Length: 188
Image (cartoon, rainbow, N blue to C red):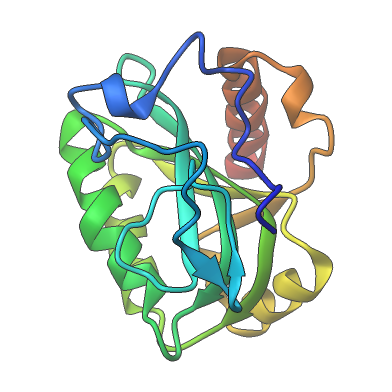
């Protein structure tokens, strides 16, 4: 797992640690000191911790004019024991919404498991953004993780999409494609 880095080809366009509106503003990273783990396996030091011991993230891109953020996740999404959604909501999402972010793309291809608890924080997150036309989309969640997400009915709040080629897009084109898919869903 230590070789899985957050997607880095947009770093010339955006870095969260240099964005004064980012929850990760001012963070410093080591390329050599591995300290965070998932399942006792070290993960790359570029991943950001936000209060969970099993789930880490990287804010890949934020556009405050078009009101969206692209966040990549790695690890185990464990609401049953770690209450990861509460941690993410309080430590990251609640800081981004007042800055004008209400459309969230979550890259979840490295989310290995999902363990559910209640839906309160998902519902709260959705309620916080829906009046602004906001949404939450998960991209490329592994099949077994999708199964648990759907079984817990979390897909009411977070839409599950597949796009194996998302890395070939610039962030604004990727966002536009996802936004168009959400507009089509809303039209149905």
